[in-house]
Length: 360
Figure 1 (spheres, helix red, strand yellow):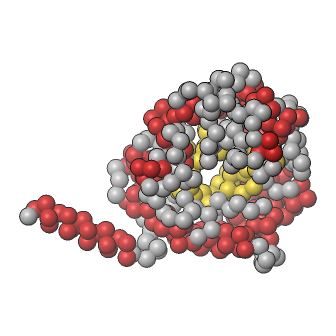
Figure 2 (cartoon, one colour; figure 1 turned 135 degrees about the horizontal axis):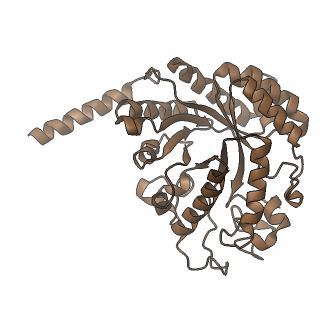
Figure 3 (cartoon, helix red, strand yellow; figure 1 turned 45 degrees about the vertical axis):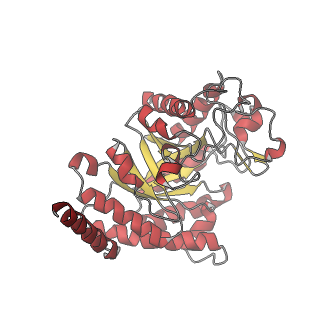
């Protein structure tokens, strides 16, 4: 009878929480109130500066993750530079605007996976095809989602470290986002070095290599968290979680990385999972306001009902946008009304940060 009463009490509490409006606050501001944006095109720098000063600052953003990838005029490895690349002066202008608005700028290059999109192979593997995980396969990138580089190639990190260091130095960054989401090609039989290797160990090994390199210059590694989740056990599936055996890597990586836990269609309660495992974590929604607010609710609830050592790891929110910087900024300013993706992302951004400002 006591067990039955306990279950009934738990069910009632759960029902009450589910019925709570998405306006319950915990009274304490989150350390991270961030947004992830693609780097602007060179001709959009003035627009980007205006948006940082007049848009992001107004909404209460304090972290900007700027996904640059290979659209930077690298001097150490100029061969990897992709078209419409930003100069060091451009990055410095964005940095100055961010600092003036009280925003921490974190540059990003998506590493390991996402080395191509559609028929386009990006700078690293375009200029260094020998670093490909599946060299000579998938002409025109047909039959795959995105290319990956081989984490065990003896020259790969000589190149990658040069790119990370140069961009991090240009942005005067104390942290660096390395992406690493949606890695489907890893430990492939077509790779003479990775064939037969444990995929979780390969993934964890690359995280450790990148983390250790950044730590030597006093920088913190940020990354997406999907490859650390078991897609089958959680029921989340192969996109927002892993279906190719990388999930056990979570137990093999240092605890001082920051995990960006992205979910777009449903507010899966995985941020608390990462925090309980010892990691700082932020929740990352996209363009569904209801999902973003429920993720914020889960973050607040976990902070309120966890031991202090766990609660402090629930760091806040990092909204993704997945449209061009210019499109997002113009939609925010009401100068773009035809881009549905931008309009939806902006609406979610406004709704989420309106709610976040209640904690300040």
